[in-house]
Amino acid sequence: MGFAFSPSNLSTFRQCPRKFQAQSITKEIKWQASQQKSRGTLVHTALEKATKRGFDSVQSWPDGLDMGFVQARVNTVRQCMASGADVFNEHELAITRSMKPSDWWDENTWLRAKADLVILPTQQGLPVVVVDYKTGKKWDEDDFQLRLEALLLYFIYGRPRVQYSYWYVDQGDTVSGLLDFSQSMDSVVNIVGLIRQAELAINGNSFFPKKNRFCKWCGLYKTPGCGL
Image 1 (cartoon, helix red, strand yellow):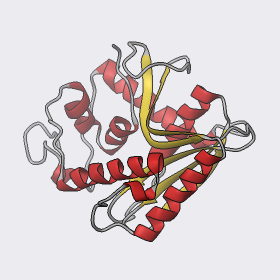
Image 2 (cartoon, rainbow, N blue to C red; image 1 turned 120 degrees about the vertical axis):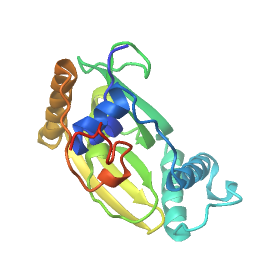
Image 3 (cartoon, rainbow, N blue to C red; image 1 turned 180 degrees about the vertical axis):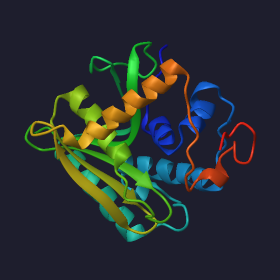
């Protein structure tokens, strides 16, 4: 299988190409779940069950959630389902370099992402909806991941209008936007450019270190392999 880009590894490349190499190419840095990620998994599981079976199907919700916000969002999803919309949880999205739909593990898969929630309305004129659940504080309004998932949805379903949202379930807040790929692809030009940069780095085996605010949490921090 060739290298498959994702929101996660592309965000790492943007943050620091050397860290990208250590995580995704040489595997020098091993992935470890943090306490926050472990809680995030519990929240995702609860939300998946609630959107599938209703808010009251979850007997025990993780602590710290804005329950009014969560219940309102779950009820909205359930209303979409009642109207006939297709709703997908943990939806795997993948395309080839020629922008054709593919399976997650296909050897030709070039770009892929797993969306927490996708709502596909029956009415063609309505936008596809993609949601990513976030725990903790709304410290960053970067919609890079959602724009990439929107791009994948466009090529997979052929529906140019995509509405995207982060649901910050602890704070009861959102970051949202609407893309219309029939009007312009400008919103994803930087994503395509970043992929090209990453491909050049892989082909040339050239990964420079880049100082950033996350350095002290990197597995290469203050080691000879860092390069800074």
